[in-house]
Image (cartoon, one colour):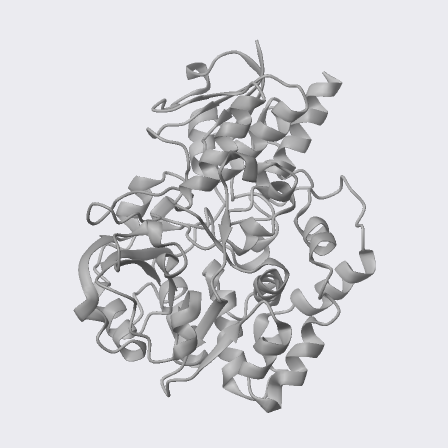
Length: 469
């Protein structure tokens, strides 16, 4: 009998398996798709030689993850590549605000009226990322904070809505960039703890950047898999699990799946019926005949480029997709241009480029024209660079990854109390009604992102149970 079986070979499932194998437990992973990866995959979606990331591409939380930092993933081929700038947010006048590794450079891009405000905002946390991240992203109730004062200060700033935090800034440049950071989790700007979302992304950039993985996001998953196999774990792909009886006998079962899938497989009925799924995404992967022709020079150097003319436009786009049930007329876009720093991703002189906008959950329309109109506003002539495109709306996103219910790449709405208390209001979020069944997906704290911390935290709960039994 195995000690643990993990269902789902995404970053969280693989991390949970590694953590258990490192502690001497026998582990097997079962993945429904033909390759490992979940939200961290790389495929040729458009033309031969153009290697795209179907979901995650830039990894601020991955490069800065306490779980990943504790593993020798570099030994297994994972190499982080850094653009000159982690992120840029261009404006219609051809200028841009930036999120740099340097606090000073970031503050200066906001203009003289807000530079000091930004420096004061991040000063209590600068240089303390490792401790703060471990405290903020760790399993609740099982470890005392290493820096309780810093964590408390972070809570005071981050728990109120981001709109409160943004009132500190006098001009819209800083507010717009920060609104874009909050929008990465697809929740409304005025949501509970949304200030913490923006602050985490900013601090991650200052601590370790927003890098891409050389060769694509698949490198993260492949490194975790290779490490797991060296530890004695096994991985079985192309193995769909429809019920618990499909799995070999084990002392524990750990699911890197959505709560809906777990309920269906384990027979939990309506246990997670109140769990909400958030807006979906409409995503386009591009093969380009050269770099994106950004009007703002800063955007040409950045790995991630946020697209939204101002705070009002970003807020309206988020409200349209999350509360009004319609696709926004001017979508807020998150774009990534990995081949600027990793030429192996495309043929010589060509580029891969990635963009998505938020749409209602399960939306079946086509956002291509709206996305490209937005891109043309900030990169005139963009359409002339397009060699091929691969589009994926919510149905295609969900078909590609079953965890993305209705196209929700956060595996559940990251808004309201569910941003932090997921998948249920519980002191033990990784446990389920079955004492031997656990959940470790992005539906559990600390939530979405390729960081492995949900898997790391769930593994703690599992190995405590295994040692007591």
